[in-house]
Amino acid sequence: MHRFLLAFHVAILSLGCGTAAPRELSDLVIVDSVYVDPASMEAFTGAVVRHFEGDSSKVEISGALLEGSWDGEFTVYHPNGRVRYMGAFEEGDRCGPWVENADSLPTESAYEDLVREVESMGLYPPCDESS
Image (cartoon, rainbow, N blue to C red; front, side):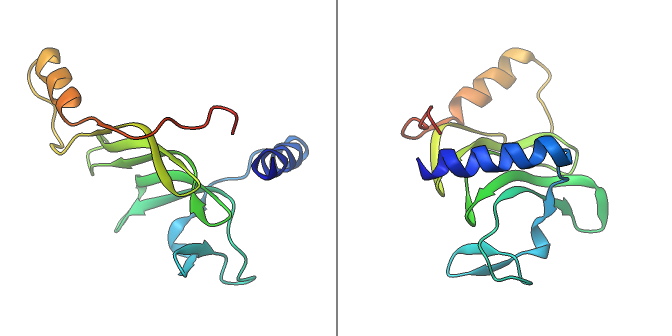
């Protein structure tokens, strides 16, 4: 219920203010395994992104934090833009299917790409659909 109220509050605020740009992950600090805003020392809630060092146009990580823990869709990219890891978190724990593409380049066939994806898939407990 708490997560629903928090999400509802964020949704209402964003309707009037427009959608806020994701926060740069490097602007936050980690305290006891929780991402916090260094100015307020409060656990951060919202979209976050990290760019590759030296290239602010390329996203390395995109996701969301809820009260300082990973929550929701999470993606890590290779420098060429290909997805490296993709899955979801729920209150800081992995949930549902996760896919890893260790190779930054696709193979020459869609079949081989699919086989790689299936072989690298990790399954975690299902994500809570009501969140």
